[in-house]
Length: 106
Image 1 (tube, rainbow, N blue to C red):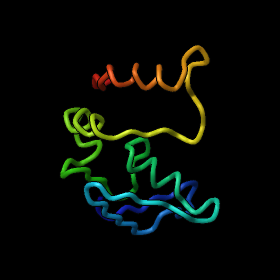
Image 2: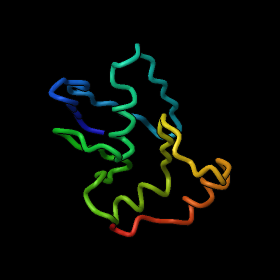
Image 3: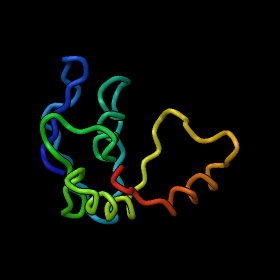
Image 4: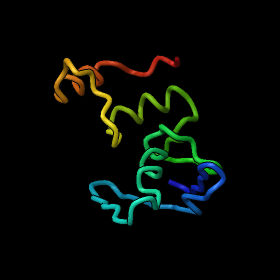
């Protein structure tokens, strides 16, 4: 990932963040509430676009093309802090469903 900066409602929540995670490395984010952990993870996951900056995962630029997104989504997972699972499905069923659906460009 290269340098990322992001603002919410005119307030900087991330300023020149540039984490690099190597293969098989485990990273923990520990900060007080409201310091940007969820925002950073949302940006890495491609849910939020950094302003300015971009994210690279295994040399592929996130949000650059649907082809890049489909490759990245094969080896990354993002579970948001807010639950949005269908009430009729377990987590296992929902992940199984998501695994079979690739982004179609919509």
